[in-house]
Amino acid sequence: MDLGLPSVRALSSTAETATGRPEVHELVDQFGRIARDLRVSLTEKCSLRCTYCMPVEGLPEIPQQQLLSADEVVRLVTIAVHRLGIREVRFTGGEPLMRRDLEAIVAGCAEAVPGVPLSMTTNAVGLEHRAEALTRAGLSRINVSLDTIDRHYFAELTRRDRLDSVLAGIRAAQEAGLTPVKINAVLMPETLYGAADLLQWCLESGCALRFIEQMPLDADHVWARANMVDARTLLDVLGERFDLREVGREDLSAPAEEWLVNGGPATVGIIASVTRSFCEDCDRTRITAQGTVRSCLFSDREVDLRDTLRSGADDEELARLWRTAMWNKSAGHGINAAGFVPPQRSMGAIGG
Ligand SMILES: Nc1nc2c(ncn2[C@@H]2O[C@H](COP(=O)(O)OP(=O)(O)OP(=O)(O)O)[C@@H](O)[C@H]2O)c(=O)[nH]1
Ligand SMILES: C[S@@+](CC[C@H](N)C(=O)[O-])C[C@H]1O[C@@H](n2cnc3c(N)ncnc32)[C@H](O)[C@@H]1O
Ligand code: SF4
Ligand code: SF4
Image (cartoon, rainbow, N blue to C red; front, side, top):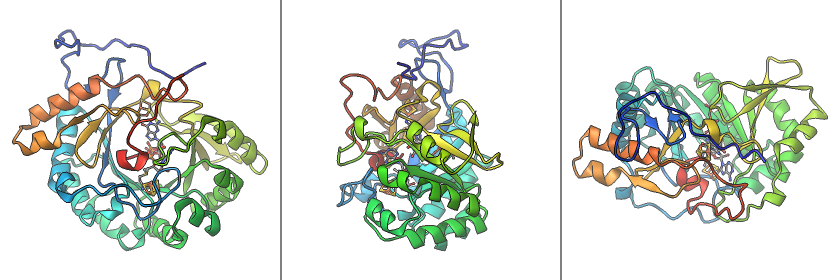
């Protein structure tokens, strides 16, 4: 079985540290991958309770003091870009819109790292009131979670009746120029049932839809491989209404594989994290809302930066810790391996 795991690739550097890590400033790992894409979680809080992500009562609250402040986020993003070779930054959560200082965080980063694309993954609840300000602050584009346009299923899947607010948020984002708006839909039996309608809606609304295979990152731990709706099943269902032609990935490290819909130019993407894993070309590094480096979605081995930063460390010391954390990144998620154990943190607590 192809597990999509990386093989060791040579890096072009002669000098090495004691651990064997080459003396390069980028975030390299032992499999020759280089992280260029930073995902920063801003909070564990959320306005929805998607069943594949959050428990019904929400995640345990993180005391304010333990969360990275706006200035701390800006400092870490600056280090990532200037010292570690990061080329794009995404804000996520939890729900980033739950941070009242989100506009300040975006503006601070835009000023500190001009020219670096700043994007956000969001559920879009309440976005209609902030899209313009976020554009002015320097946000480039957004991806929105929307699993179904059926109000009944939306309320069931997210445990909140907020479909209207999400749709208003998407429209406002488009009007404010936060484009292209990409839609993320996690594959579940309910999503599969409405998948063709959701694609039709996205085609008409000018959004780029991607379906995502559900991963064992739900807080309730009910995920089971046997019950998972996979990319193959989705393609069969969509194929009944649309003509689909495979075009592949935008670039090797992009999670989504694209299919041309009815001859194009519109596409539909599938992020097949489980059945067609893309760990081999992973270029992501993550910072949790509490300021730890998480080298892989599935690895609970985190390295603290927040306390080191607060104790007065300089930028290079923080960069060194970050490099070491990424050097020890695991080969991949291992979901398909015997004896796989899901990580302790759920998706909302990591920053998906
Ligand atoms: N296994 C795995 N899945 C990921 C990773 N990053 C993102 N995903 C999945 O892809 C989904 C979409 O991620 P987004 O936040 O929209 O980011 P993206 O697809 O990288 O973003 P674009 O650059 O806009 O295409 C997430 O909800 C995850 O389910 C990753 O590093 N590993
Ligand atoms: C954790 S959310 C955080 C940002 C924002 N609240 C949102 O929903 O877009 C980021 C992404 O993770 C995805 N996600 C959550 N749980 C997942 C799971 N168990 N498997 C796959 N993707 C998941 C969501 O669909 C969303 O696109
Ligand atoms: S997927 Fe996003 S919107 Fe849904 S519960 Fe998780 S963090 Fe909230
Ligand atoms: S599971 Fe880990 S290694 Fe694989 S793509 Fe995601 S973050 Fe990268």
